[in-house]
Every structure is written in structure tokens, then in C-alpha cells.
Amino acid sequence: MNVTSSAVLIFGIASFFVVRGKSTNAGGALVLFLFGFFAAGTGAAQPIHDLAASFATFLSDIG
Image (cartoon, rainbow, N blue to C red; front, side):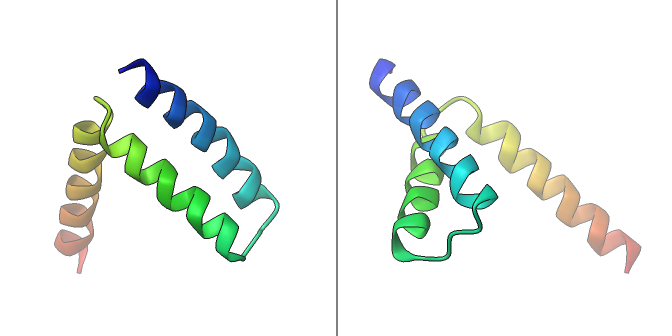
């Protein structure tokens, strides 16, 4: 679990700089992909999924 937490932290910080720098190259896409991949393996995956599902439900109820 230590390796996953460290990878999430590293890729999270790198993702911040990729998005802030508006980098649209293959390296930026790889960093964002890896951040999502490692974040999915943590305990934060289920709350993020629930939040996205409730937001989608909210949007469908509006329209």
C-alpha cells in the first residue's frame, strides 16, 4: 500500500502541473492516465464514483 500511496501523490502533483501548464502532449496524457489508474486503487475510488454517479443523476433530473 505504501507504493500505491506514493504513486498517487507523485502522479497527483505531476497532474496538477500538467493541467496548470495546459500541456497537450503524449507525456501529459500519460501522467493523467497513470494518476487515474493509481487513484482507482485507493480508498478514494468509491467516494469519487459515488459523487460522479450522484452528479449524473442530478443532471438527468434537471433535463
